[in-house]
Image 1 (cartoon, helix red, strand yellow):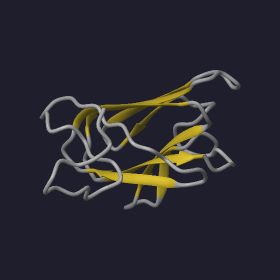
Image 2 (cartoon, one colour):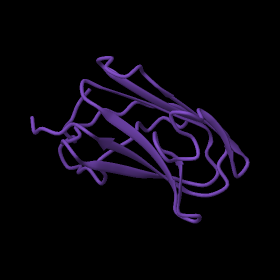
Image 3 (cartoon, one colour):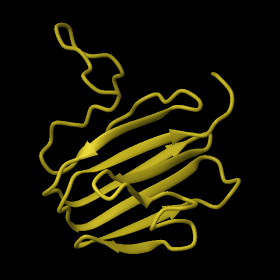
Image 4 (cartoon, one colour):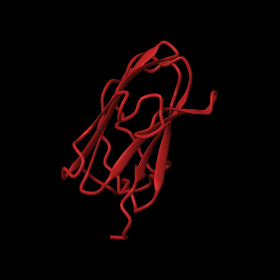
Length: 130
């Protein structure tokens, strides 16, 4: 995967999705103790994301309208103890690899169509710089 933009183009976001209308893969570097996020617009149907890293990485899904975390490993509506929840017409499912497993895998699936925009964040919990 290329990390640089072609000549004459620039990166407008930390995460740039593939141009395919239905699926895509994006690779990006995430510094330690940094959160990078993108908005998932209303009207998205059957969204899923999988994060893999050789250090601890966390997915978070934030609802800016209700100011709640629909997904966060410890305190979100969907979390380590409650893996599947309903949220405004969708079902949010969360999976995380076993503690101590390397590489770390976290995934989230939104079944249904989003009724509102949501902020998806990738949080690096690695405590050292590369």
